Amino acid sequence: MTLKTIVETAELEAFRLALFSAGKKLAFVPTMGALHDGHISLVKQARQTADAVIVSIFVNPTQFGPGEDFNRYPRTLTEDAKKLAEAGCDAVFLPNIATIYPEGFQTWVRNEPLENQLCGASRPGHFRGVLTVVLKLFNLVRPELALFGKKDYQQWRLIEKMAADLNVPLKVIGSETVREPDGLAMSSRNRYLKPEERAMAVAISRGLKAAVEKYKAGETNAATLTGIVAKEMASQPAIKVEYLTICDQMSLAPVGESVKGPAVILLAAQLGTLRLIDNMELNPAG
Ligand code: PAF
Image 1 (tube, helix red, strand yellow):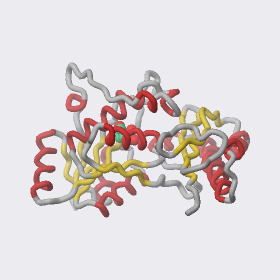
Image 2 (cartoon, rainbow, N blue to C red; image 1 turned 45 degrees about the horizontal axis):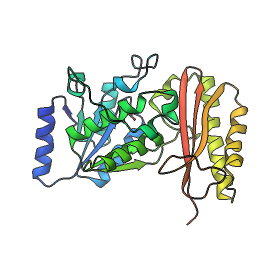
Image 3 (cartoon, rainbow, N blue to C red; image 1 turned 90 degrees about the vertical axis):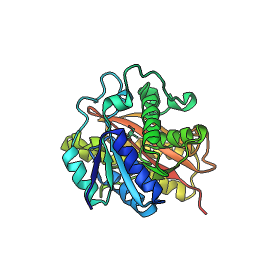
């Protein structure tokens, strides 16, 4: 299959209209590129649910804070295009900065209760940038469904809520985190881990997995469950935990003393120059 490269919005509109008039269903995977197997699994899942798949690659400046890695964020377009073609993607949309942020741009999407907690607490403005660019991409691409990885759990929930609150006519799907064989959640930034940091980073998923196992064995005390992860983190003093908490899966409100319904255990940590995040769901049996 040949991958169509789309830059201009007129080309995008022609691509979309051709599908629409043939009654075909379009699925969309927004990305910032530097694609790994997690992104590719979203493309493959999209392929199974829709007639055509489009991926966007846009390194969105407004979701990076001052001092964050916007300038050195990996840009690997040639490799990305090859992976997309192999995965059966129909088109890649590479919008120009002027398409997304034209001169005089001043309207932003926010979710004040949710955007400043968890990752938003240490990355002010991050989710304002994410929600704004994602809504713009949704409006340009106008797909029937859009897929996001659950690794960015807060991002996925915020986007789902935005689509519901603003009547965006599409279905937002969260897809399971894809992991390296040793458990590390895949991320475009993992390539920056030094070999010794890469070896340490696996403690994060090991700790989360141990907590999930304990929960499955009947433990519902939130402090006991986070304590299991904290103990694993303490074995790797180079990993500085930023937050470690158990939240309700939908509202992302902390669960309090005990886990009563569908919850998620979330962690963010600093390792060297890199900020790592991961999470695992705690789903009541049955
Ligand atoms: O998860 C990402 O890659 C980005 O935050 C997204 C959703 C493409 C918005 O820029």
